[in-house]
Length: 160
Image 1 (tube, rainbow, N blue to C red):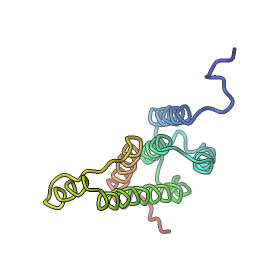
Image 2 (cartoon, rainbow, N blue to C red):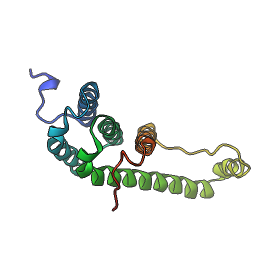
Image 3 (cartoon, one colour):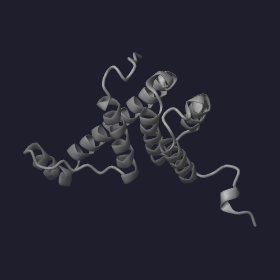
């Protein structure tokens, strides 16, 4: 009986763990040690995006983006910026949609009206979003924070 680790097509959780391991390997290496492999890395990342991804996979992708920012020189990352920015925008649009959906359901629900009244009085905002999606939004925010923490002269200007 074949082992689950020998499957030809790993599950999305296995793909996420493989991406996390790859990020750890790049982070453990020297600065610019893997810059020659960036075309292959870019191909694999776009393949994961094209196939469709789960929030777990997208969160690990943002972790990998953070590792690339820390371990690869900015001049080598120029070809990856369109992918990184597009995924970041897509994730924050998804967050906005989740929040708008919660807002509309809160207006229609009697119990949620009490929560909405508490939120209007500067109380906590009650939003029911799945944990995997929350992890994705946190990972995207960490990536944005990492990208913004670099001095402007270290980061190339990117314009869509």
